[in-house]
Amino acid sequence: MKFTLETIARDIEKGDRRSLARAISIVEDGGPESSWLVRKLIGFSGNAHLIGITGSPGVGKSTLVDALISEIRASGLKVGVLAVDPTSPFTGGAILGDRIRMQDHTMDKNVFIRSMANRCHAGGTALATYDAVRMLEAAGYDVVIIETVGVGQSELSIARTADTTVLVLMPGSGDDIQAIKSGIMEIGDIFVVNKGDLPGANKTASEILATFELNGQSRAWTPPVEITCAEENTGVSKVWTDILQHKSFLIASGQLKERRKMKVQAELSELVADIARSNLESSLETSPQVQDLLCKLLNQELDPHSAAQEVIKALFNTSHALPPAKPELFSSK
Image 1 (cartoon, rainbow, N blue to C red):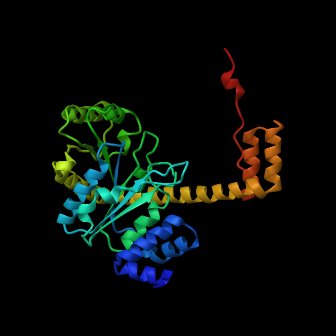
Image 2: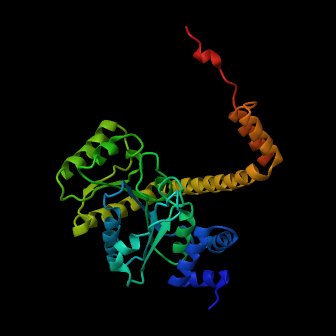
Image 3: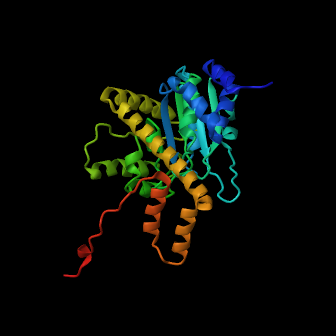
C-alpha cells in the first residue's frame, strides 16, 4: 500500500499510530518531506505539556518514565514518549532500547513510545525532537515526555525544549555533588532522587534542599525534591502531582509563554546553524575561494580567525567584524 505526505498528514489528525510513526521517521531523516509535514501540521502544535526527564546514565530515567506513564494514563490523558539514545560517532548506530524497557504499555492505544537516535547532536536531545513533538501534538497527545541521553553539565538543551524539566539523581554515585555545581541546579524544575531504597537517599535530598538555601536566590517556583523508587512505583505519584502544579504555576505566572518563546528561539538558532554547517562543508570541497583560504591556513600565511571571517563573508555575503583587541589590558604595571 502506497502512502503520500497528504494521506500521512490527514491520518495523523485522526490519531492514526502508523502514520504517526511514519511521520516521525520522515522528520528524523530531514529534507523537504520533513519541512512539508511540519508546514502542514504546524497549526496543531503547542497543545501538549512537554516534560523533560534528564540525568546521568544509570539513575533510572527509563524506569521513572515507565512509572510516570501509568500515573498520566490514570488521569485519562494521552501520553507520547520520545526516548533519545546516543548515536555512536564511529558506526552511526544507536541501541534504541527504551521501547523494550516500557513493554507494559505497548497494548495501550493512548500511549506512543518512540526511541530516537540523537545523531551526535549535542545537548542530550536530537535536532528532530522539536518536529517529532509537533507530530505527537498533531495526533492529539496531551503530554509528551522527552527522555534525554545521559547528560553532563554542559548538555542542558532539554531545559530549552521542555515546559517542565525533571532532573533525576541517585544516591551514592556522586550525583549529589554534581547537583550542587553551577549549571545543573538551574535546569531542574523538579528534583527526583531515584532508587530511594539505597543508602544515602535522604542525605542526597537534604543536600539539594540545602543548596537552594545557600544559593540565596529568591525564586517564584521552589523546585520540590522527591525520593522515589520507580522500580516499585514508590513516590512516583508525588512527581506527577508536582508536574501538574508546575504547569499551573507556569500558566498563572505567564512563564509558559516565555519558555516556549525560548524554545522556538533555540530551535531556530539550531536549524540555521545546521544549514550553515551543511553549506560550509559543501563549500570546503567546492568553493575555490574557500580552498584558497585553506591553502593560506596550511602555509601559515593567514590565521584561522581571519579565515573564518572571510568564509562568513563568502557564504553569507556579509561580514562579522570582530571588535578591536585591547592589548593594553594585558600590559604589566
